[in-house]
Image 1 (cartoon, rainbow, N blue to C red):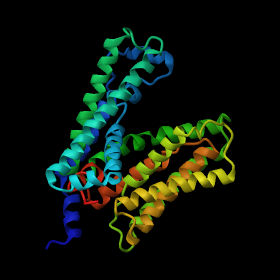
Image 2: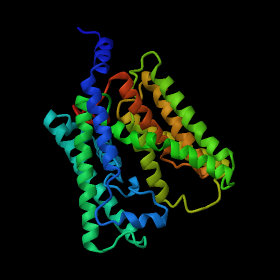
Image 3: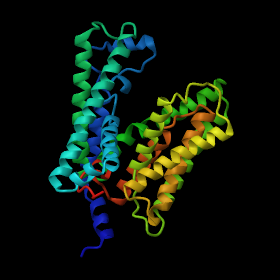
Image 4: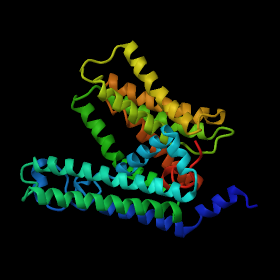
Length: 343
């Protein structure tokens, strides 16, 4: 049997795989510079929007609808045991389940596209001909772009280096880091925010990367992060916060209430990890690191108003993307597609 380390080394040295991965990222970058149909690029100048802004491109929603579509279906699979048993019955059923997730992702993209179209119509001069046809064109463009990204992510995973879906997710964050750093310096220089706010965010990013990478390098770990428990757990946590109107106040939370919220989020992440069979002793350090990162991001967002509750998940996904390249290990759809385990 071939040595897995040798196989990984050979894969990382394959120039064709690197060409496919870099080519996929280049296509994504190009699409991020293509305006949505029906917009007037020249009118963006007066609104201080950069020309060919990624926020108004055909890839404006990125791969987030794909991630959320997969997360919703995975949440249903781990909660509804009959569905899990049905999907585990044959490879064909498992593939049908994840095909349904991709269709759901396109529906999410359509909903986000409609929201973008309506918001853009409210900007003076950006849309020369607002109305139903403009909104329809935006929906068609974004849904089509999302379908293309589903295909591109799979091609990059199977024929390139690393997990295509995670790389396409992380690419905009990495590309935007210089602008984020410049923005942090500017708000500190102009006094718009205390100096410790951007410093706290920078500390969270550095600590998250160090903690997550160290956790995957421990004995017994498989050098891989399971992205789905923190993503699903934090998403459910946010839904509960909104449903019960727990965010309808402007004052920072008390220490006791903050501890309750942090414990609730951590409990949900652990619960979904347990349901996915990823709460074993060998998973303790990676799972604990993910919970700490999500807790840190939540605490910063509640106490300082910096970042957001999902920031921890986005950091985990970016680290997982880097690890998938460094290790030469990639799974279609972030490890969800393929044989579905029995519940």
